[in-house]
Length: 365
Image 1 (spheres, rainbow, N blue to C red):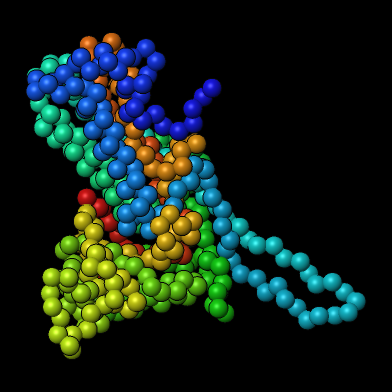
Image 2: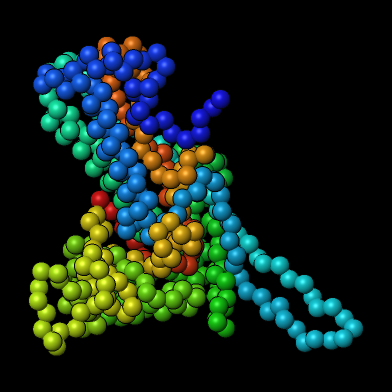
Protein backbone atom coordinates (compact mmCIF):
# COMPACT_ATOMS: atom_id res chain seq x y z
CA UNK A 1 0.00 0.00 0.00
CA UNK A 2 1.37 3.43 -0.94
CA UNK A 3 2.01 5.97 1.80
CA UNK A 4 0.71 9.49 1.15
CA UNK A 5 2.98 12.41 1.99
CA UNK A 6 6.71 12.97 2.24
CA UNK A 7 9.14 10.46 3.68
CA UNK A 8 10.78 12.00 6.73
CA UNK A 9 14.13 11.18 8.25
CA UNK A 10 12.70 8.37 10.34
CA UNK A 11 13.11 6.34 7.15
CA UNK A 12 16.84 6.48 7.71
CA UNK A 13 16.35 4.19 10.69
CA UNK A 14 13.11 2.37 9.91
CA UNK A 15 13.64 1.50 6.24
CA UNK A 16 13.14 -2.19 5.54
CA UNK A 17 16.46 -3.98 5.61
CA UNK A 18 18.09 -1.47 7.98
CA UNK A 19 18.71 -2.40 11.56
CA UNK A 20 18.66 0.28 14.28
CA UNK A 21 21.10 -1.68 16.42
CA UNK A 22 23.56 -1.99 13.57
CA UNK A 23 23.10 1.71 12.75
CA UNK A 24 24.17 2.50 16.29
CA UNK A 25 27.48 0.80 15.60
CA UNK A 26 28.42 3.64 13.25
CA UNK A 27 29.74 6.62 15.16
CA UNK A 28 31.56 9.90 14.80
CA UNK A 29 35.01 10.42 16.22
CA UNK A 30 33.49 11.64 19.51
CA UNK A 31 31.34 8.51 19.83
CA UNK A 32 28.04 10.05 18.69
CA UNK A 33 26.06 7.36 16.86
CA UNK A 34 24.38 7.83 13.51
CA UNK A 35 21.06 7.09 15.18
CA UNK A 36 21.56 10.17 17.36
CA UNK A 37 22.35 12.29 14.28
CA UNK A 38 19.12 11.11 12.63
CA UNK A 39 17.18 11.88 15.81
CA UNK A 40 18.52 15.45 15.99
CA UNK A 41 17.88 16.07 12.30
CA UNK A 42 14.33 14.76 12.73
CA UNK A 43 13.75 17.17 15.61
CA UNK A 44 15.15 20.12 13.66
CA UNK A 45 13.03 19.40 10.58
CA UNK A 46 9.93 18.81 12.68
CA UNK A 47 10.33 22.20 14.34
CA UNK A 48 10.99 23.89 10.99
CA UNK A 49 7.94 22.36 9.31
CA UNK A 50 5.75 23.42 12.24
CA UNK A 51 7.21 26.93 11.99
CA UNK A 52 6.21 27.20 8.31
CA UNK A 53 2.57 26.77 9.36
CA UNK A 54 2.58 28.85 12.54
CA UNK A 55 4.89 31.88 12.39
CA UNK A 56 3.92 35.40 11.31
CA UNK A 57 4.58 34.72 7.64
CA UNK A 58 1.81 32.10 7.67
CA UNK A 59 -0.56 35.09 8.04
CA UNK A 60 0.27 35.93 4.40
CA UNK A 61 -0.61 32.60 2.79
CA UNK A 62 -2.51 29.33 2.85
CA UNK A 63 -1.60 25.90 1.45
CA UNK A 64 -3.02 23.86 -1.39
CA UNK A 65 -1.95 20.84 -3.40
CA UNK A 66 -4.14 21.88 -6.33
CA UNK A 67 -2.47 23.41 -9.41
CA UNK A 68 -5.20 25.95 -10.19
CA UNK A 69 -7.65 28.36 -8.61
CA UNK A 70 -10.58 30.47 -9.83
CA UNK A 71 -12.19 33.64 -8.52
CA UNK A 72 -14.99 36.10 -9.12
CA UNK A 73 -14.48 39.36 -10.97
CA UNK A 74 -16.41 42.18 -12.64
CA UNK A 75 -19.78 43.57 -11.57
CA UNK A 76 -23.48 42.94 -12.00
CA UNK A 77 -26.76 44.64 -11.12
CA UNK A 78 -28.94 41.60 -10.68
CA UNK A 79 -31.98 42.94 -8.85
CA UNK A 80 -34.88 44.39 -10.82
CA UNK A 81 -38.36 45.58 -10.01
CA UNK A 82 -40.73 42.83 -8.91
CA UNK A 83 -43.61 41.97 -11.21
CA UNK A 84 -46.42 39.50 -10.55
CA UNK A 85 -46.41 37.70 -13.89
CA UNK A 86 -42.82 37.54 -15.06
CA UNK A 87 -39.63 36.03 -13.77
CA UNK A 88 -36.50 38.11 -13.26
CA UNK A 89 -33.48 37.65 -15.48
CA UNK A 90 -30.91 35.23 -14.09
CA UNK A 91 -27.26 36.08 -13.62
CA UNK A 92 -24.08 34.15 -12.99
CA UNK A 93 -20.76 35.36 -11.64
CA UNK A 94 -17.98 36.19 -14.07
CA UNK A 95 -14.99 34.00 -13.29
CA UNK A 96 -11.28 34.10 -14.03
CA UNK A 97 -8.51 31.80 -12.90
CA UNK A 98 -4.82 31.01 -13.05
CA UNK A 99 -2.25 28.37 -12.22
CA UNK A 100 0.05 28.06 -9.22
CA UNK A 101 3.76 27.28 -9.62
CA UNK A 102 5.55 24.26 -8.21
CA UNK A 103 9.34 23.95 -8.02
CA UNK A 104 11.59 21.37 -6.37
CA UNK A 105 14.84 22.16 -4.52
CA UNK A 106 17.68 20.00 -3.19
CA UNK A 107 20.11 20.91 -0.45
CA UNK A 108 23.04 18.53 -0.01
CA UNK A 109 24.69 18.08 3.37
CA UNK A 110 27.87 16.71 1.82
CA UNK A 111 28.59 14.13 4.49
CA UNK A 112 31.14 11.89 2.82
CA UNK A 113 32.39 8.69 4.39
CA UNK A 114 35.68 10.35 5.32
CA UNK A 115 33.95 13.34 6.88
CA UNK A 116 31.59 11.22 8.98
CA UNK A 117 34.47 9.10 10.21
CA UNK A 118 36.39 12.11 11.53
CA UNK A 119 33.64 14.64 12.38
CA UNK A 120 32.45 15.63 15.84
CA UNK A 121 28.85 16.29 16.82
CA UNK A 122 29.22 20.06 17.03
CA UNK A 123 30.29 20.04 13.37
CA UNK A 124 27.24 17.98 12.40
CA UNK A 125 24.99 20.32 14.40
CA UNK A 126 26.47 23.30 12.56
CA UNK A 127 25.71 21.62 9.23
CA UNK A 128 22.11 20.97 10.31
CA UNK A 129 21.65 24.54 11.55
CA UNK A 130 23.03 25.90 8.28
CA UNK A 131 20.63 23.75 6.25
CA UNK A 132 17.67 24.89 8.36
CA UNK A 133 18.70 28.51 7.78
CA UNK A 134 18.78 27.87 4.02
CA UNK A 135 15.26 26.42 4.10
CA UNK A 136 13.96 29.46 5.99
CA UNK A 137 15.66 31.77 3.48
CA UNK A 138 14.19 29.87 0.53
CA UNK A 139 10.63 30.38 1.81
CA UNK A 140 11.19 34.02 2.82
CA UNK A 141 12.71 35.04 -0.51
CA UNK A 142 10.02 33.18 -2.48
CA UNK A 143 7.21 34.89 -0.55
CA UNK A 144 8.74 38.37 -0.77
CA UNK A 145 9.53 37.89 -4.47
CA UNK A 146 5.91 37.12 -5.27
CA UNK A 147 4.80 40.18 -3.29
CA UNK A 148 7.11 42.50 -5.25
CA UNK A 149 6.77 40.97 -8.73
CA UNK A 150 4.11 42.48 -10.96
CA UNK A 151 4.72 40.22 -13.95
CA UNK A 152 3.38 36.70 -14.44
CA UNK A 153 5.25 33.49 -13.76
CA UNK A 154 5.02 31.09 -16.70
CA UNK A 155 6.59 28.00 -18.23
CA UNK A 156 6.90 24.28 -17.61
CA UNK A 157 10.08 24.85 -15.60
CA UNK A 158 7.88 26.45 -12.92
CA UNK A 159 5.28 23.69 -12.96
CA UNK A 160 2.77 25.80 -14.91
CA UNK A 161 2.63 23.85 -18.16
CA UNK A 162 3.32 25.27 -21.60
CA UNK A 163 0.47 27.81 -21.53
CA UNK A 164 -0.28 28.39 -17.83
CA UNK A 165 0.27 31.68 -16.02
CA UNK A 166 0.61 32.66 -12.38
CA UNK A 167 -0.08 36.42 -12.17
CA UNK A 168 0.43 38.92 -9.39
CA UNK A 169 -2.09 41.20 -7.73
CA UNK A 170 -4.46 43.49 -9.62
CA UNK A 171 -2.55 45.25 -12.38
CA UNK A 172 -3.33 46.84 -15.70
CA UNK A 173 -4.08 44.41 -18.50
CA UNK A 174 -0.91 45.50 -20.29
CA UNK A 175 1.20 43.99 -17.48
CA UNK A 176 -0.35 40.52 -17.29
CA UNK A 177 -1.63 37.71 -19.49
CA UNK A 178 -4.51 37.10 -17.05
CA UNK A 179 -6.65 40.21 -17.25
CA UNK A 180 -8.48 40.96 -14.03
CA UNK A 181 -11.37 43.30 -13.31
CA UNK A 182 -11.82 43.41 -9.50
CA UNK A 183 -15.35 42.70 -8.28
CA UNK A 184 -17.41 45.83 -7.70
CA UNK A 185 -17.84 46.78 -4.04
CA UNK A 186 -19.84 49.42 -2.19
CA UNK A 187 -20.98 51.18 -5.33
CA UNK A 188 -17.49 51.32 -6.87
CA UNK A 189 -16.81 49.48 -10.11
CA UNK A 190 -13.34 48.78 -11.46
CA UNK A 191 -11.70 48.24 -14.83
CA UNK A 192 -9.06 45.79 -16.06
CA UNK A 193 -6.60 48.70 -15.85
CA UNK A 194 -6.90 48.82 -12.05
CA UNK A 195 -3.40 48.89 -10.52
CA UNK A 196 -2.09 47.70 -7.15
CA UNK A 197 1.64 48.04 -7.94
CA UNK A 198 2.27 51.70 -7.25
CA UNK A 199 5.46 53.63 -7.96
CA UNK A 200 5.98 56.88 -6.03
CA UNK A 201 8.84 59.31 -6.58
CA UNK A 202 10.74 60.87 -3.71
CA UNK A 203 12.87 58.09 -2.28
CA UNK A 204 11.20 57.97 1.17
CA UNK A 205 8.09 56.59 2.81
CA UNK A 206 5.58 59.30 3.73
CA UNK A 207 2.24 59.42 5.57
CA UNK A 208 0.55 59.57 2.15
CA UNK A 209 2.05 56.20 1.14
CA UNK A 210 0.19 54.51 3.98
CA UNK A 211 -3.06 56.47 3.65
CA UNK A 212 -3.20 55.62 -0.08
CA UNK A 213 -2.57 51.91 0.59
CA UNK A 214 -5.29 52.02 3.28
CA UNK A 215 -7.80 53.40 0.76
CA UNK A 216 -6.68 50.85 -1.84
CA UNK A 217 -7.50 47.88 0.37
CA UNK A 218 -10.73 49.27 1.79
CA UNK A 219 -12.26 50.01 -1.60
CA UNK A 220 -12.26 46.27 -2.27
CA UNK A 221 -14.08 45.41 0.96
CA UNK A 222 -11.08 44.55 3.11
CA UNK A 223 -11.33 46.10 6.56
CA UNK A 224 -8.56 46.99 9.06
CA UNK A 225 -6.46 46.12 10.86
CA UNK A 226 -4.03 45.75 7.98
CA UNK A 227 -0.33 44.85 7.91
CA UNK A 228 2.57 46.58 6.16
CA UNK A 229 6.04 45.14 5.53
CA UNK A 230 9.14 47.35 5.23
CA UNK A 231 12.84 46.58 5.02
CA UNK A 232 15.56 47.55 7.52
CA UNK A 233 16.80 50.43 5.32
CA UNK A 234 13.44 52.22 5.56
CA UNK A 235 12.69 51.67 9.26
CA UNK A 236 14.17 54.96 10.47
CA UNK A 237 12.08 56.96 8.00
CA UNK A 238 8.86 55.19 8.95
CA UNK A 239 9.53 55.63 12.68
CA UNK A 240 9.87 59.37 12.13
CA UNK A 241 6.54 59.91 10.36
CA UNK A 242 4.06 62.18 12.15
CA UNK A 243 1.20 59.67 11.82
CA UNK A 244 3.26 56.79 13.22
CA UNK A 245 2.62 55.45 16.73
CA UNK A 246 5.37 53.15 18.06
CA UNK A 247 4.72 49.87 19.80
CA UNK A 248 5.43 49.67 23.52
CA UNK A 249 8.91 48.49 24.43
CA UNK A 250 8.69 45.85 27.20
CA UNK A 251 12.07 47.09 28.50
CA UNK A 252 10.92 50.69 28.91
CA UNK A 253 8.72 52.18 31.66
CA UNK A 254 6.36 54.54 29.86
CA UNK A 255 5.30 57.96 31.08
CA UNK A 256 1.65 58.94 31.52
CA UNK A 257 1.49 61.09 28.37
CA UNK A 258 3.22 58.79 25.88
CA UNK A 259 1.02 57.15 23.23
CA UNK A 260 1.86 53.60 22.30
CA UNK A 261 0.24 51.31 19.75
CA UNK A 262 -1.74 48.36 21.13
CA UNK A 263 0.20 45.77 19.14
CA UNK A 264 2.76 43.11 19.88
CA UNK A 265 6.39 44.24 20.27
CA UNK A 266 7.01 42.13 17.15
CA UNK A 267 5.69 45.14 15.24
CA UNK A 268 7.37 48.53 14.96
CA UNK A 269 4.03 50.23 15.62
CA UNK A 270 1.00 51.44 13.68
CA UNK A 271 0.16 54.00 11.03
CA UNK A 272 -3.16 54.45 9.21
CA UNK A 273 -4.52 51.24 10.75
CA UNK A 274 -1.50 49.30 9.47
CA UNK A 275 0.60 47.23 11.85
CA UNK A 276 4.11 47.80 10.52
CA UNK A 277 6.65 44.96 10.56
CA UNK A 278 10.34 45.07 9.68
CA UNK A 279 11.33 42.19 7.40
CA UNK A 280 14.91 41.22 6.68
CA UNK A 281 15.55 40.85 2.98
CA UNK A 282 12.96 43.43 1.88
CA UNK A 283 14.88 45.75 -0.48
CA UNK A 284 15.13 49.48 0.22
CA UNK A 285 12.26 51.68 -1.03
CA UNK A 286 9.81 48.75 -1.17
CA UNK A 287 6.90 47.85 1.06
CA UNK A 288 3.65 45.91 0.88
CA UNK A 289 0.34 46.57 2.58
CA UNK A 290 -2.01 43.62 2.88
CA UNK A 291 -5.00 42.17 4.68
CA UNK A 292 -4.46 38.98 6.67
CA UNK A 293 -7.45 36.88 7.67
CA UNK A 294 -5.41 34.74 10.05
CA UNK A 295 -2.75 32.06 9.81
CA UNK A 296 -3.31 29.81 6.77
CA UNK A 297 -6.68 31.39 5.95
CA UNK A 298 -7.84 30.68 2.40
CA UNK A 299 -8.68 34.41 2.14
CA UNK A 300 -5.04 35.48 2.60
CA UNK A 301 -3.23 37.22 -0.29
CA UNK A 302 -0.90 34.34 -1.24
CA UNK A 303 -1.29 30.61 -1.85
CA UNK A 304 1.57 28.11 -1.49
CA UNK A 305 1.23 25.07 -3.70
CA UNK A 306 2.67 21.79 -2.43
CA UNK A 307 3.04 18.35 -3.97
CA UNK A 308 -0.11 16.32 -4.51
CA UNK A 309 -1.22 14.76 -1.21
CA UNK A 310 1.00 17.03 0.92
CA UNK A 311 -1.05 19.47 2.97
CA UNK A 312 1.69 21.80 4.26
CA UNK A 313 5.10 23.14 3.29
CA UNK A 314 7.60 20.49 4.40
CA UNK A 315 11.31 19.88 4.20
CA UNK A 316 12.18 16.19 4.10
CA UNK A 317 15.50 14.33 4.23
CA UNK A 318 16.69 11.36 2.23
CA UNK A 319 19.80 9.69 1.01
CA UNK A 320 20.89 11.06 -2.35
CA UNK A 321 19.39 8.74 -5.00
CA UNK A 322 22.28 9.63 -7.32
CA UNK A 323 25.03 8.68 -4.87
CA UNK A 324 25.20 5.00 -5.76
CA UNK A 325 26.25 2.50 -3.10
CA UNK A 326 27.17 4.48 0.00
CA UNK A 327 29.66 3.22 2.57
CA UNK A 328 27.61 4.49 5.52
CA UNK A 329 23.80 4.77 5.98
CA UNK A 330 23.70 8.60 5.99
CA UNK A 331 26.44 9.34 3.50
CA UNK A 332 25.48 12.11 1.04
CA UNK A 333 22.31 12.94 2.95
CA UNK A 334 20.21 15.64 1.27
CA UNK A 335 17.20 17.79 2.09
CA UNK A 336 14.29 18.16 -0.32
CA UNK A 337 11.78 21.02 -0.56
CA UNK A 338 8.99 21.36 -3.13
CA UNK A 339 6.66 24.36 -3.27
CA UNK A 340 5.60 27.38 -5.27
CA UNK A 341 4.16 30.74 -4.24
CA UNK A 342 1.28 32.31 -6.15
CA UNK A 343 -1.37 34.94 -5.54
CA UNK A 344 -4.73 33.88 -4.13
CA UNK A 345 -6.75 37.09 -3.64
CA UNK A 346 -5.63 39.60 -6.26
CA UNK A 347 -7.09 42.53 -4.29
CA UNK A 348 -5.77 41.70 -0.80
CA UNK A 349 -2.31 43.29 -1.13
CA UNK A 350 -0.85 46.45 -2.63
CA UNK A 351 2.93 46.77 -3.06
CA UNK A 352 4.63 50.18 -3.03
CA UNK A 353 7.93 51.40 -4.56
CA UNK A 354 8.82 54.87 -3.29
CA UNK A 355 11.93 55.63 -5.36
CA UNK A 356 10.29 56.21 -8.74
CA UNK A 357 6.93 57.06 -10.22
CA UNK A 358 7.36 54.02 -12.46
CA UNK A 359 7.00 50.60 -10.85
CA UNK A 360 10.00 48.25 -10.98
CA UNK A 361 9.99 44.76 -9.46
CA UNK A 362 11.95 44.40 -6.23
CA UNK A 363 14.63 41.78 -5.63
CA UNK A 364 14.57 40.38 -2.06
CA UNK A 365 17.67 38.87 -0.52
